[in-house]
Length: 477
Ligand SMILES: Cc1ncc(COP(=O)(O)O)c(C=O)c1O
Image (tube, rainbow, N blue to C red; front, side, top):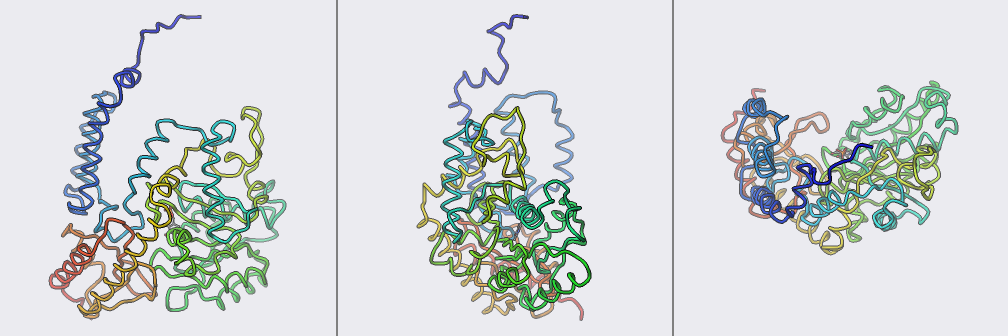
């Protein structure tokens, strides 16, 4: 065997031996600058994407420049070129400012890099995640026999719900896939649901046509009568209804579908009920607000993203599943190259195989601030949303959605185009808003899900909206 000289070190070994203390000093500068920019700086990027592209074209990826240069370069590119979607005055996204304990958790798990695919490799980490999932299942109102796991995000969690539905209802699905169904599958979601369902239906081999978008009731909530009618009509036409995908907290407007009615229909028709509570599901940790999600406990599976309203770094979704056996059926596989596990290891119960310690981000945040910390955050955000609604009405804007959650849809009754107003605000760089279509008409959309957002930020938003209205001409009618 060829001897390997012990003194031959790679640059990566040298870096560790030099001690990470020095490295952290270089790193903490850009990290602190990023946090500070999220309160003090502009929201929208200063440098056009084309200029960033030119800067990137001059970088030779084959040549290492050392850590200090690499972190400085990456931080500068991101600072100059990216929208600060986690900014206190970015009202456009549900990817709020990550809490510091979750960022540290990410660093710790990245360094230790435990492998969570089998319990025997990382019993502590796996058991920490399982404890967290069991605690959240209880908060959700699921029985102790329910299961769940962390995912890359809401889309993977929803995809898991669909796989569980198919495995539960069609015994041949695990061997024959969609061919085990006696006809074309149907999944029902409201017209205002998150349309990842279309991608997920395609990926499951069911096709785009499997997704039946049920009309809403005029206020952004799924219409249960229309749902009942669609299921009956599909059955009569030879299609195979599989799953109702209700939304608790629509992306557009924060509306909560009638969960009890959906659960009743699922029972009547024998369908699987999945509730996509990707962002509003965070409220399960706050028992004072848990009633807003009443009925979610009747679901067969539920999606909640920790990386949305629970303020942990992105790539942290969760799926909760009532029927643990069906989850195993959907993902079971055996192979000799995997070490012995306990039968419910992540690699046999989920999409991912090698799996990072995603749950540590939520574990650390909860262990730092507890439920009381989250409740204080929700208290503030609900109050800020009320202040925004009041301020908008006082200044003559028209509120469009009747959500009790901190997402506010509004329009200019004077006929100014919502997209033009949003574009003006983006160019202004001080605030950032979404614009959406709600019940067939455009609207501006502001969600308040960053813990950094305070009363001053709401004042800035109201002020900039006034300026936008003064600058943008009403569309001719
Ligand atoms: C209701 C809802 N479901 C699913 C998703 C998709 O989640 P992710 O982006 O984490 O995959 C989103 C994203 O905003 C959402 O709002």
